[in-house]
Image (cartoon, rainbow, N blue to C red; front, side, top):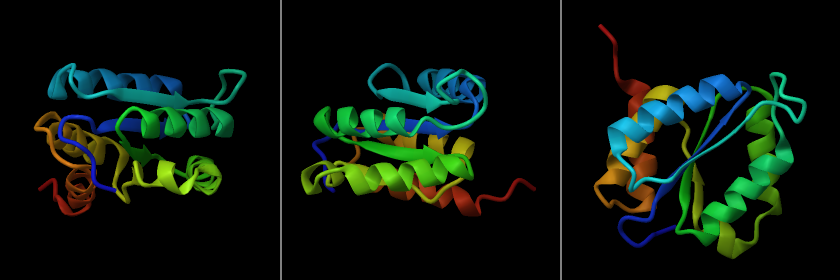
Length: 136
């Protein structure tokens, strides 16, 4: 899963296009333009939900463009990500990693790490470390 420095992006998978777009805006301000942020959110008709085909396409594009950390909100988004992973080739899988992390906090941590030119593994680790950050 190792990537060349500076090429790690993020894929945000959410039930809500507004939530994902707002988070992508926050991340672009925190991480700058060097970090690719792709959102795949909402159902095909624009309602809340997950478009599995869009998730698969985003992962395939990311694998071809240097790799990405995938961050997911809940429920069917997780199922769509799992289904997409099953469709990827071994080569594509080597460039896409799902972080077991909270969507917002994990995405911010991964984006900051990615902006420093870290590897895919380091960006995933940064995202997953956000699980244990207390707020008080």
